[in-house]
Length: 273
Ligand code: ADP
Image (tube, rainbow, N blue to C red; front, side, top):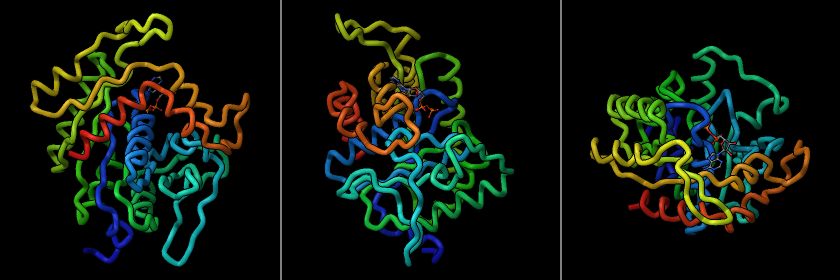
């Protein structure tokens, strides 16, 4: 293995989370997969490579944390006291949460390389990489930098609408071109389950992701309905009116009572098989 990639040597599995569009729930899916794996006693890291829209620190209630360095490299920010869930994100390097990353391609590529070589994750079972939407320079940089460590593959997130599904085909073609296995597809925001009557209303239509998987021969990982509580937990994880510090990780404690937790436990199990 290339000396540069020592930091990734002790990681057993690397999974990329991709989506054709922004706003379909890619980052929230990354967080939920990571959390479900952690609950299955795996040691997990999340690498947030969505350089222009790093939302993982906020979702996990660690926004505002600073990256520390030790002799091995950058130390991830740990979300749980047992250090079973660590995060690294460009968000930790920005002066404040409203700072924009206005960088040209080469600078972004250099940053991605640094994230993949300089973070000392230690022994991890799973590294979940949250990528930007689409197929951009950043994706090519990730693939190039991972070529010596062979990631397990990609989980692709879509919503049920046709416009989103069209973009999924592009993501799949990208994976084919760069020889990245597709681990499966998740249809997020697939219906809304009424909290009172428990009836599921298909706001946007449903089933497009599953049909696409059937057509192309990929694994369908599951339907994830809209859960208004999830939005609240992830958007304001410390539960304060004005959440500037994101200092607690009450997402972790609140999420266990979300019906989506069961869905993601199943998805995490399928991904491992
Ligand atoms: P992306 O990473 O694709 O841009 P995000 O994960 O940031 O998308 O999700 C966009 C917004 O939608 C966030 O506010 C998130 O909390 C919310 N969201 C995502 N999935 C769901 C869901 N299944 N139920 C409710 N809200 C969701």
